Image 1 (cartoon, rainbow, N blue to C red):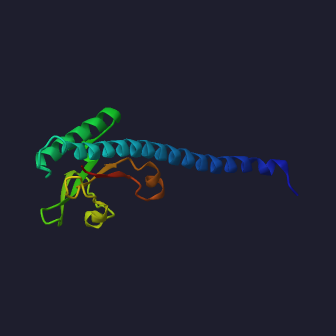
Image 2: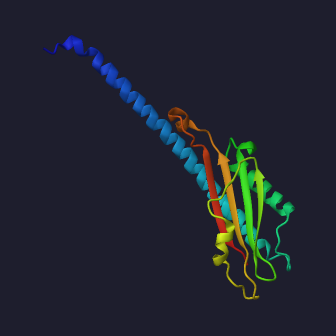
Image 3: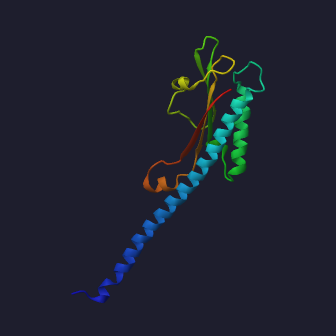
Length: 178
């Protein structure tokens, strides 16, 4: 026999279960929103830095090689841009890697890489595999290919609840030079 007074705790238990599930959903949604916003910022910034790399050859005569000083300047520009657009930007969570696939006078591919920041960046595709993307310029040489990869380590809100790591947001842009 179902007596009314024996079912009073049932609502409390169901409400607690639904409340916990709803809390997980809100934390998950907030974590995804923060990471998607950061991903958009990194996408725009990596594309902009790759475009600067491509266009810099317009101002340099025949010297298409990248210098450490240029990369440091681009890293500073990128970090300052992130600092302006993200209120709680922390330079210790930042990583950037600029790679260039260039061709020597014998048309042999040469890959140079410039890592910056504290975050380790391991690209999923080696630059050597992108040689087929290089086009011949009107000057009879192969155009360089530039890749800019940026990484930022975020807070791990949802991952901390379920015991996983979901805290790295990255973006990569590839650009064919002039």
